[in-house]
Amino acid sequence: MPLDETVSPDFVEENPQKSDYFEIFRLVFGHIRLIAGITFLGLVCFSVYYLLMPDLYTASAKIVIERSESQQPKSPQEILIPLFRGEEDYYGTQIEVLTSRKTKEAAMKELGLSPLLRYSVRASHMKDSRVIALSVTHPDPELAARIANAYVDIFVRENSSENLFISKQILQLIPETTELSGAETQGDLSSQGFNREQFVGSLPSVTADVVIRKLNDSKLQVEGELSELSQRYKPEHPTIKQLTERLGYIDQEIKERTQKIISNLRANLEGKINITNVKILEEAIPPRRPSKPNRPLGIFMGTLATFLSSSFLVFLMEYTSQKIKSEEDVQQFLNIPFLGYIPETKELVVDKGEGDRPPKSKFSSLVEALNKNSILADSVASVRTHILFSMPYERSKRIMLTSSIPDEGKSTVAVLLALSLTGLGRKILLIDADLRKPFLHRYLGMENLKGLSDYLVGSASLKEIVRSVNGSDLKVIAGGTISPNPSELLSSERFRDLLDEMSKSFDRIVIDVPPVLYIPDGLVVAKHVHSGILVCGSGMLDGKIAKTIKEKFEAIGHALIGVVINRANYEQEGYRYRYYKRYKKYYGDEGKDAGPDGSLAASWERMSRAWKKSELGMRYGSFLKKFR
Image (cartoon, rainbow, N blue to C red):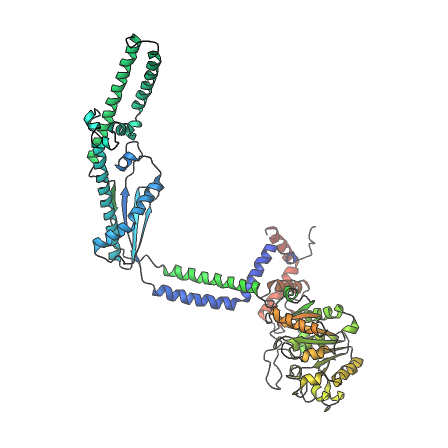
């Protein structure tokens, strides 16, 4: 379905993937102080760590290991094992030998150093070459170069000695001639089960020769014919004689060819007997600059790791938290109706005040706050609507608000709810039943001369304690003089009679009671009211504690009708903030609560809204939408 051209492109539904990214950003931004603090601490720690690390120098030497892939081996080891297993296998073996403990011990002994000397050695095969690079890292550049050179020198000498030994052993096994007498075959080697003819015939250089292969094939063919004809003819038969002569000729050819190969092989070994296939390409020289540590990179990577770790910690705390912060938490821990959010409004209370001094606020009264702060007013109205429609009128005439622990804002919610109910044209009475620490009179800017406790002890009349609120039709009964036995006063018949009498004059009564986790006053008042509401400060209350409060009310037969989450931080709860932002934009309330100061931000918002509503702005928005 095509969008109406009169609708601003900003109201098009957002991409869900972008919304998820937005939530992640909001979550990180909401805990930016914690993340920034941990990241800064990581920056300091990694800076100190890398600044205290000593400079390390790396000296490198290079050696060349010749390796032939031909059938004629260049090293004595390949005479017996000529199979080529690949560059990685061969050079990997050489690297292991070069960096082995035996080489290390020999190098330390040659240099006169302790075997416990700490340094790092690393060897690698340079791709597409026969070069192996050896690197030694140590705080002393001169010593690093000496150790690297000692390693390669010992490796070259050991390789040469090994080649010399193997070459001598093989030369003893290879005869100077293939004409072996019976005495040779019956010597010491023969007594040990060794046959020189079989050894020579099994040499890869002989078996792999093309000429010998053809001669062996011809010999097998002649032998087969001779065996077949011997069954029909006598040895004097001309054909038998001819095949016999031909077989002798082939054997002589094989011997001569083998003699030639063995002669070449001996000449090759004798010529290379003192030559190694390993040589030094570059000797190590003392480096001028340290190779480690890379302090800027190390500090950056460490700080980045700290930032990512702290962000992960925030996510972990968010998704494993047992605190009640959202509607989902209410359903998980309490399984009772959720009545709504009251947003955190920093302008509402700047200073709570002390003693009888009223709290300071940017608004002259709560009535002004509800009129000027659209988010606050709409949130309170939403809570009010949930309460009114959650039960019949007869069961919602007396509403009690309580909390589990202090400072969750139950008194603030009670005042806002009472003012919101008054806005419907109803007669509303607000009672401060927190006789231990009365607070509502200070919040409303009243004096606490006479109140509920004074009436309950008989020192004040109803006319003296029921007072009006400036700028509103709301009536209030303050807490009065602090009483040493508030539970007894609230459980008295006089308090019940007070509520019955006030119910005749007012449509609804809103009662603020103390936190009920350790104080029984709220449970006592619950017996005289129709409905109870639990106020939870966002992120302040553990779900198990709230569940305990719920069970307390259920035990006395007065279950809570719902939960209100106070001080909801929309800056941290990204999804709610996003929806409220779109709501404000849609209904034209953007910037409504920015204040009458005519700030630059408010002016910019007004200009932006005017541009988006203009014909040119809408065309520009449609043009951008095509490329999104």
